Image 1 (cartoon, rainbow over the protein chains, first blue to last red):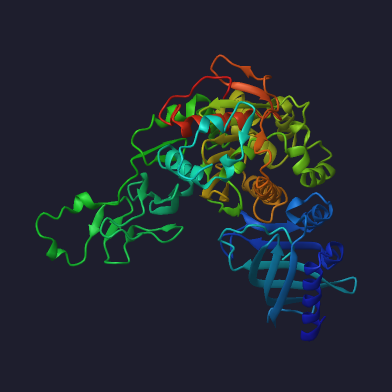
Image 2: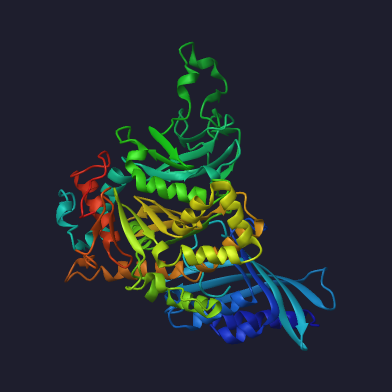
Length: 157
Length: 437
């Protein structure tokens, strides 16, 4: 599907789209059946019995983007200014020709209204081919502070 | 306001307005911590958080650290998190399960019920050393109702049931009876977030019916598009939904007149799968009349002064950190003895609105910070809370009711706050029946 360089370029592109609030283009990266997950209070919780920070399928993702574009999601009005570094990109051995499992880390500076937050974590993407395009089937974000108080996580991570 | 001068609380909260210093003055905040959080009943946690012997949570009453623990004997206690030897915190973790709490300093070891069981090298203490008198100190007062555990650092408080009053107890009964098993499970984790602003902003907003249709429209409009139902109608100025002042600063929403009764029950009964199964389970557990009653009234919000809010699918604990800094811990609740997919659905719905990445509560927190920023403008220091003033209805039991977008909720909370802070009526007194609540 993609070689290591191609995977890196895909992740960098996703990072730029999130940093620049290019919501619609970011949404286009996702597969028709998708799952976006940010666990809460731990890294490997059972989502049937435990709350997550984000646990969304494709319709949930579309709602999120629609809210962000509505002009009335005040927690992102004005939007945070974002810059993230994506690194440690690693192709998992469980990858197959049809689906790449990719690990990476990120370090994000988020500035809004005189406050600079640092957000960091590990990410696992599962990338698939859909209509000849690479798409995100699942994305799991393990934040280092997922069990601590987080003030505002309404931008994309 | 001159620092150190006595604060005239009666001048700060009037019937129709409140002075901004109530939210911004550090001296007032210090006095709130002392009078409200260190001398009155404060919510500590729900027994459903510590279902097994040895389960514990670290909590704070105002600024004082406590351990909320279920002992090996099955009893839930609130113990001061302080070694009786040299004062070190004996439980450094936020949550866990342990038979013992061992102080890291000299190794004094306490049972999860508080008793001192281990003192390394005791021989230097002599015969008068009374181990039995040196257990972890329990809070002076601790009581619970339907699993909701409250504590007071002062002995001199009215009984808990009197502080809560019959209407709040009835709301807690509803919260419990929404489960066929009659109890909440509070094991689904916690959303922790916060804001740069005063703690009362979150308490008042939890029962503010006026903000829904504006502040949360980005969230609810999408819900409406998906469901085809008018998701915000309950909070319009024409809504028959009500807000009640229940005494002692406690406030509830009653959404049942706005169709959360009949229509919601009909939807449950007519939807195959978990909705119909849940309804049937609830009827066989409590009988149809009680099932319909709790379903009609169980969608509301109940703000319990000073730091607890019960909402249909969550418990919300408000933690004052500084005059301009507050943490909000939201515990999604699971129902007991229901189809598992129902609890899963509850969690997914909860996540979409609440928490630091949610689509609704984040806008509340944003507004609390904008209020805090706006209150720096001092030409007119007053905040209006007069919406619906004079339109309240007083029932025989003293409950004051108004249309849901009335600011009766603010007047009730702040009116009680003023009485506690001024000593006019302290937290030790019974609910006062007054239309000003």
